Length: 278
Ligand SMILES: O=c1ccn([C@@H]2O[C@H](COP(=O)(O)O)[C@@H](O)[C@H]2O)c(=O)[nH]1
Image 1 (cartoon, rainbow, N blue to C red):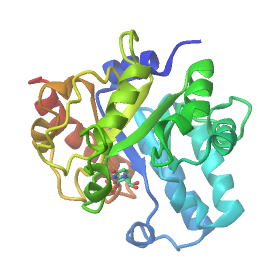
Image 2 (tube, rainbow, N blue to C red; image 1 turned 45 degrees about the horizontal axis):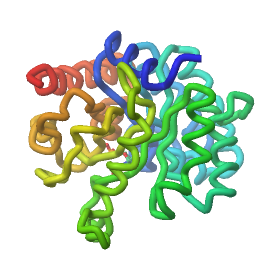
Image 3 (cartoon, protein in one colour; image 1 turned 180 degrees about the horizontal axis):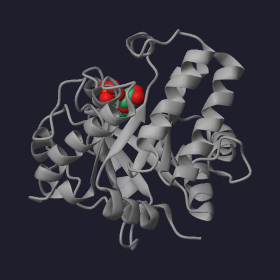
């Protein structure tokens, strides 16, 4: 089984360095002329899959917007995941899970075991019960060619108070996460399967990302105010590993499929312009 890092490296080579989120906000449903109900959710996600599935390297459904409709929303999430995989994009489910290790095992089975209805290529995870508590996710991901993106320096302004706090050895909390994920990726080529989430909004953080060896997911572009040029400031010499991520900026071009695709081409072009100079 090929590793997630290898599959991601190929997808980005073939389709370009871009992740697009499927975040069916109530406001976007209204903008697309859809009701804020299960039928609206279904129509929204089918259109997004049609526009994105055969051209974007990684598509990132945001689980919260499906869960808010209960079991019928989760059924649509399952079907969206299947459709995206069939269309050839890698699916990164944004669920930000984290818990004590024995419960993380169950989350790992839910998302990273190929027999699960919610099986995806990769998930986001929260390290705030300790990076070590995520070990069952790392292990199942490694076994089945999956990936895990761990929150390090998030795009929201509230994150800094926790993530930049100093630990006993003087490193920030974020740097300890960065260092632990770097260890997991040691020796992986061309790219490790364990990534970090580092917001494009956060400016020059003074954190050392050079040894991570895995992908750096960069949300915060577009609707949260960061632009492609900010990637240079945030990531510096680590630009090669960056996977820029947009949700509302692209989705607000819908529901016309051609317009959604044009938005994808536009943001991809902007990101390539910055990432090519790495
Ligand atoms: O630090 C983080 C981690 C995750 N996110 C998620 O990414 C998208 C961003 O959506 P936009 O519409 O492009 O703002 C959303 O699903 C967040 O939950 C993040 O923004 N920042």
